[in-house]
Length: 318
Image 1 (cartoon, helix red, strand yellow):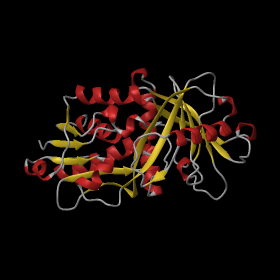
Image 2 (cartoon, rainbow, N blue to C red):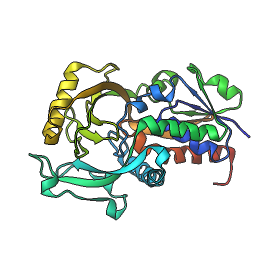
Image 3 (spheres, one colour):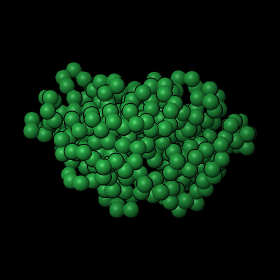
Image 4 (cartoon, rainbow, N blue to C red):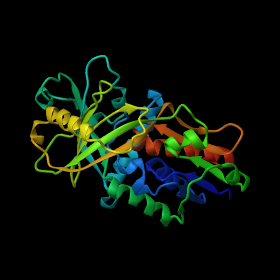
């Protein structure tokens, strides 16, 4: 059977590798960084298709992933649970993300649920992944299928192809150098983890570029964000961004008060004009990258898209 090498061990790479190995393929992962050092480990990892195009495909992959996450939320070892998430919006914006969700999963927010100054929002029941649990869960699930992971940077895919491997590219920003894709670029995101002192409402305001704000209540902390700086390669958090995030989030949720900072982190979201999830013409490379801020959200839908592409390569019945 034709072996498969998945490049990358973030959320996309792990979900794809799990889907493939549980479909009977021999799979290994080669990754520049272990899962806990990828941008996925920094992510707030709540279901919401942010900065993901094209919208129609992103919404479909998001909805497919949503149903997979519902199953995972029923298993305590996954680190996935369902939470109420307030999506702040206004008339005229694209809110089609909600259209493929179950009817009882989303409703219009009541006026008393909205922060001061906001007139419209949707309250959605969505999955949240605690990345410190979810990433190890995926890796263990992959290993239970006899999958192997090796931390090694791949600088060329031709040797793998010459050895007969099907290559699945989940390298995110790495595709810029490894595959010469100059259309993929970083959107720098910073988050601030603060101590939990009382209940808060998880929510997001992503309406205006440069004014991204979100609050995610996790089991161990509250994650505050964020930034959305395009073409910014700085992986280090800054004090200026920390203070901007704190001020913005306190306006959204007054119950935050003066939060105690635990940690500030920064990561680079791999953005592209369109998510690339397809077989490359002419050689056995299947791409799965450029998810913007929706890597977690579209992960299982894109993994299934990769699986379908590989089934066409090997001509297995679907």
